[in-house]
Image (cartoon, rainbow, N blue to C red; front, side, top):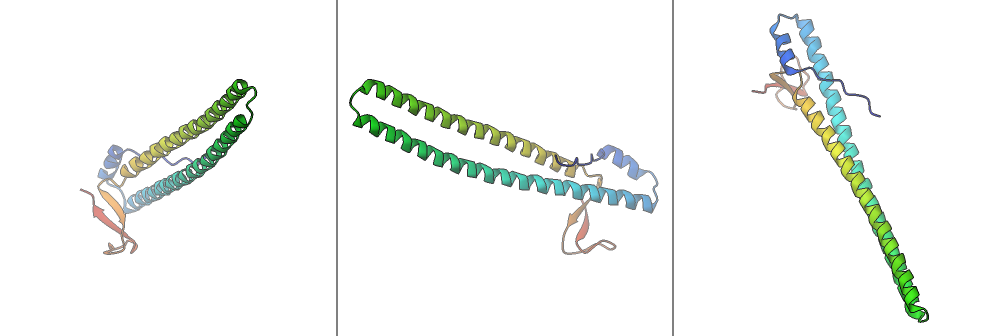
Length: 169
């Protein structure tokens, strides 16, 4: 189980907090916590995207495995048909057994495919839901009117060369 991501405070309460007179150290502490929260959310989003890519690879591998299994089962069914053609005695019974085996093999293969598709869809929905939640949390960052963007040009005074502050309105 992954560690829980801290809940981001509501933007309406943040606006009230900023309107009150606060000391520079309180504001700096608040912005630092906001920055840490944002980094944690971005990290979690990256983890979810990586996990989604892993699931896609696993699905591709499972699909390839199922395709190999289908080829093997098809070959087995063809072999049974050939045996059936060689034996002419008791044709009706052998044909019924062969078709029953073929149906059983086909049903088993279809059940495997359906199970994998259901599992993949469930994982995709969960990943999509988690990605949307992370994007929403990033969008509701307590920075309010100020957004911190990672840029390499035009650094603001007092900030690292990697960060630039811009007005989001």
